[in-house]
Image 1 (cartoon, rainbow, N blue to C red):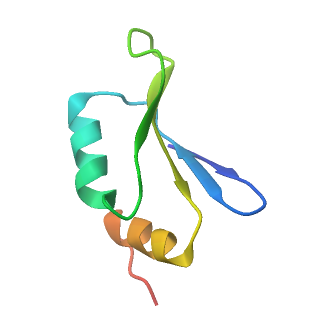
Image 2: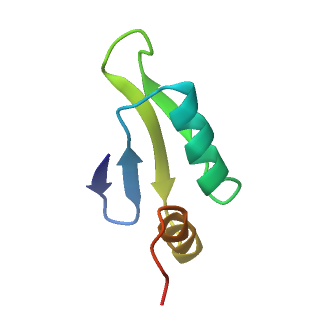
Image 3: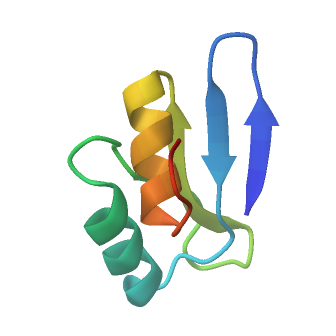
Length: 70
């Protein structure tokens, strides 16, 4: 997973575009965060991406990865 720190948001990329990865991401992040695919699913240069723009989305993401929100 990589995170691009932009001025007003975070852009998160994964490098796993398997059906299991998609299911896990959507179970943990939807409906607060929209998950999209990127790249070519026939190559190793692909995965999923999502944007975190609000405090609500950041807190939801942290809970989704097992972190506590203060």
